[in-house]
Image (tube, rainbow, N blue to C red; front, side, top):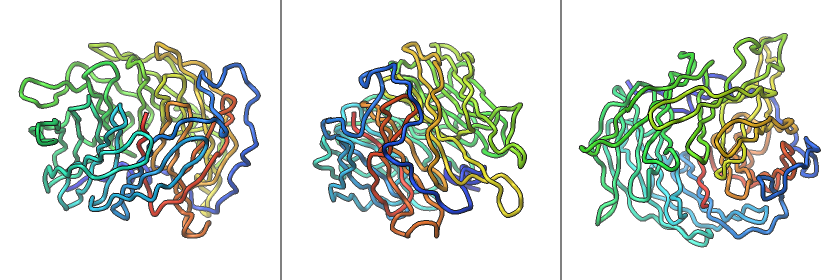
Amino acid sequence: MTKPTTLVAILAIGCAGKHGAHDQPDASSDASSDGSAAVGDGLSRCDTSTAPRALLVAISAVDTVQLFSLGAGMLTDTGVKITGIDKPAQIVMRDDGAEALVIYGGWGTPFGVAAIALALDGSSAQLEQTLLIGTDSTPISITYVDRDHAVIALTAANDEVVGITRGSSGWVAGPRVPAPAEYPLAVRARPGTSDVLFSRSEVGVDPTLDIYRLRETPSATWQSAGSHASVGPTPIAMALHASGRALYVPTSDPTNQPSPANLDAPGQLHAVQISDDGFALAGVVELPRIASLIAADPQGRFTVSEGNVYTLDDHGDPDVVAYTWQTVRTNADGSLGDAAPESQPAAGLLFDDLAIDATGHLVAAREMEEGTVPASQQYPLELWAQPVWGGWQLCATAYLAGGAHVAIAP
């Protein structure tokens, strides 16, 4: 029996709210007065003049990958839509911005990966190859290992991992092998190495997120190597520091859980040190609120997670109706710095994806509660800037045709 996807799992643990929407925060509002770092040190502005970069958005509901140009505080719809990819899901960008890979299909339909060639500045994109891998599984996550190798996590009755390699005539799939554990959530390449980190958890059941190291074997399969790490309570996401020396996992606080009498329960951000042969817990920073998703700055300067804003539903139970942004600075070695004050709340049902670009701007694919906004505005794609630490400001919004995953050119 096929297991649920990450999005379904996120819904199951209550990232979605059930009530009406609130106004978006005013673009001039600041949540922090700490201006101790310059813009080049991780801060960003809506009016910064930056070269345009490609932003690809995979929208599963309409079988489309849409191309935007990102820059100068704007999201520009180029009008380019790549069709013919069935249920595109997670999408990842190659490190030179000239190609992206998107997993597709599953749930009883043929599945595989599509390669998209594009211009770094977002001026063009076209489907380069569609690689069919099988018909009996569902791809959950993909990561580039280098420009000619990628790894995909699959879920079905038997969870698996498969590597793909670029040959003379395009991408080809290697042998499928059992995953190191059931219920995969993500694969992420470890920067500066050929390792891939594999996370798993049966969401809503398991108390921890478990992270394994995968390495390629001489038989071109990706197998677990060494010990694994476990972080709790009940997280679902991880992000890697640019150095490859640490990963980060947001959780609730096990000693201070949300309840009808404790709607402002705090969260935690855990750091896990990564060495060439093991993992070690490396500190915790208290967050103002509980988070589920996390994005790490590709320059290694900070992380961002959403913060759940709870209210009581019609049955008197805590329910999420809005989110703040929670920012934690990180050091060059991957260790945790301080947490900035949270931003002002903005309404939302859930987030499908978060990504930070090289200039320090945040891109968020948000979903709104049905009926609280016009149908054409139910799936906003947002661009945010951080002119002071934690003081995120909304620069631009575009509206999509469904929930989305995003990939940004460097």
